[in-house]
Length: 60
Image (cartoon, rainbow, N blue to C red; front, top):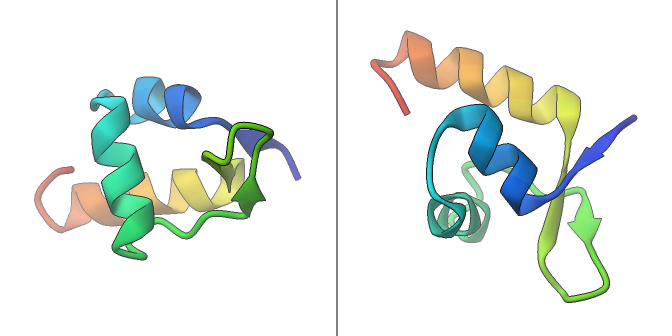
């Protein structure tokens, strides 16, 4: 399982870093853990599934 940082998720979803952190805080995108700075890290598979779901619901 590959882990993605907030910046990598933001780039993949084409959104701002702060929005990724908000998605994690609201449990819309579940973090797999935290990095050394205390920021969430995400499973690559979960991020891909989130993107597919968000696109089906009308966009991110």
